[in-house]
Each structure stands twice: as C-alpha cells, then as structure tokens.
Image (cartoon, rainbow, N blue to C red):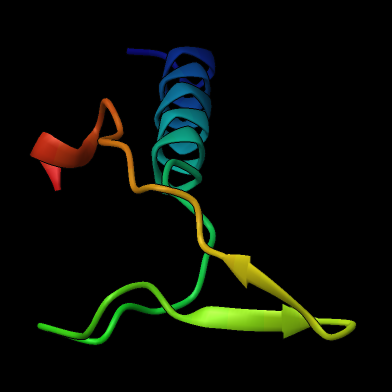
Length: 61
C-alpha cells in the first residue's frame, strides 16, 4: 500500500467514526427506573415531554 492509499483509508475511517458518534438523541438524562415524564413549566404553561419512540439504531446500543 502506498502513502496515498493509507491516507485515503485513514480519512474514510475517520469520517465513518465521526458519523457514527454523531448518531443519537438529544434530551434530558433519564433517571434509572424513574417516574412518569416530568412536567415542565414554560411561562406558566404546563408542557409534557413527547412520547418516546424507538430509534432505528437503539438495538445496536
């Protein structure tokens, strides 16, 4: 393998690692075995958290 091939391989592996680490959901941390979804107030109005839907990559984690 030449240096160019090694560089291309390193680039592909680096980009794939960056893409895989960016997968996930952003949100509040869940308390293990916690209660029902927390009700938060925004300007005096009650807001419930949305229903948790399974994500396609959840089985991999």
